[in-house]
Each structure stands twice: as structure tokens, then as C-alpha cells.
Image 1 (cartoon, rainbow, N blue to C red):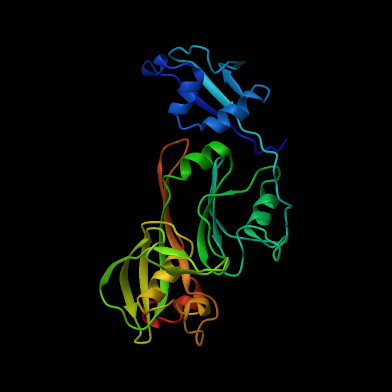
Image 2 (cartoon, one colour):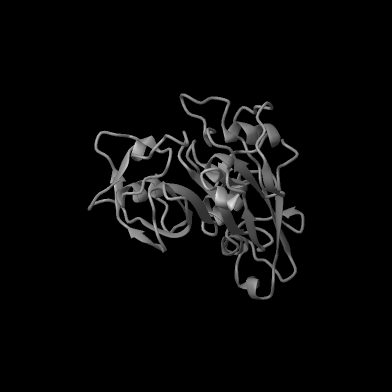
Length: 288
């Protein structure tokens, strides 16, 4: 068992005594699936240090504890070094570099953020909450246990910075449905029968050739930001897949620069920022 395995405690209030132990945990955001798993683990659910059944009554002042254990891990790669901007028992936030996949794939075995995570936290399952494309850099939230992953899914908000081709002014909203291009696993496009996709943006600056925009995706479709800006005639610089100019930058100019979330245990609101990566920033010397 890894030293990073986590026990999370919940205190029963007077209001909570209307629940049995199982319903109480559900009210605290513990998923039904995780509760089922915990029931199979020795001392997975305890009341005041003693194993309790999910159907048992609970009382004011009781401490209900759940024990997180992981069994699915990736091979760690100690040669990978990714900056960490936040770290505690439940969450770690990386500043992922460009050209690093988040998950292993057929073409990428051992060189991913997941492999870095597994080297840092042996024995823990890799649970990224926001997934970035290989060529998108920036902040990536990873939960260290199943309970944290479940709660973080609904609280993470992201702000991206993108260099798009051409000159944009002001800001706006792109509301255009996105679907998969026929016979392609990767490519997406705006199409009438696609899934709803909404992107808000504000212009930060322009150099006359490229415009730096602050982007807030309202929905989370695959390649949403890339497809939307290509759709309005301003593809991301460096994004040759969707028509971007690669003269001045070789990877898509997209960086997750701000992120916020409600901590799954402390309930504190966490705000984090990441500096714009160098190859994007140098396109705009006026902001350096």
C-alpha cells in the first residue's frame, strides 16, 4: 500500500442524524460507486474507528471515516520533471509543458503526465480532472483519490490564453455546435447536428498579425477552442490541423493559464495562475 493512500473523515452534525451511514456519505459527495467499493475493503467505512455498515444509524458527533485505496497505477518515470503549482493530500496541480500527452497511448508510453504522476505518487491511480491536448500547455488538476475526483469534476473552472491568427477586437461569444468529422477519430468541426458548444473570449492585445485572447470555455467539447476560432476565421497560431499559421510558432498557441476549484475536503476556493509560455509570449513583445 502506498504511503499516499488517504483516509477522509466526516463529522456528523445534528442535522445529519436523519441519515444512515450510507446516505450520510452520499450527502457529502461520496459517489454510490465508491461506497460500493469501500464496503469491500477492510475498514473501508468506519464510525469512530470501528467498521460500520452503510445501513447503520449515525449519531451527532460521530466521525465517519472512509479509506481510499488504489489498485490501478501507471509505470512511473523518474526522468520526467513537471512543475507543481499546488499539492496536498487530495489534489495536485501540474503546469504541463507543451508536447507532453496527459495519458499514455500507443505512440506514447512512459513520457506522459500520468507517468510523471506515478513516479511522484507510487501506488496512486492517475485521475486527471481537466485534460489538455498534447500540444496545449498549462494547468492540469489531478485528484489523488476517487472521492476528490468525483467532487472536483463539477467545480473546476478554466481560463485559457490563445494566440489566434489575424486581428480581433473587443470580445464575444462563439455559440456553434461541434461534432466529429466523418471517418476521422480526431478531427472535429462545427456542424448543425453537433453537440452544443459555447466559448467566451476577450481580446488582451494584438500585434497586427496575431491576437492574444483570454478564453473561457462554457462547455467542454473536444478541440472546442481550436475549432471555434477556426470557424470564425481566426485559427490558433501554430495549429496546422485547423488552418493556423505555423510560420512563427510550431505548436498550437493555447495555454491553460488560470484555474479555480472548490477543494473537495476543506471546501476552500482555490485560485491558481500560470505564466504564459515563452513561445506564445514572444509573439507579443508589448506584454513581456
